[in-house]
Length: 168
Image (cartoon, rainbow, N blue to C red; front, side):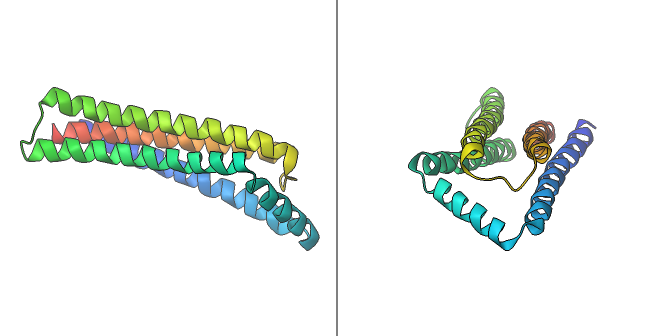
């Protein structure tokens, strides 16, 4: 019976995270569509110049790497847990539980690092690149971004609990 609750949490929170990301993309697209061609050109030039900075390139690569590490560790811990529970593989139940816990912890930490790196890049960009959005919209987009990451952490944590309850 627990797995139904966990599955519901997974579906709800992963869906909410996805909807929040889509909504923030919609807000950005609406703001971009309102701009004149000259404004779009100036913002694009400033963004390209900003993205070409060595420090920012490194941070952007680290942000992508954090996402890949988060997803890969979580999926690998789930795969290890499931494969060892179905095939009587190597490792005790305690080891399987620790690997599942470790995968979930690394996932959470990697997303926290991604958010903090994104905060740094956004803070530096605020002074360099002209913004398409108003001040209120920028704050709302940032809050939506953080909310989506929180929803993904909750949804994937419920996914780990679901994996544990189904395959234990």
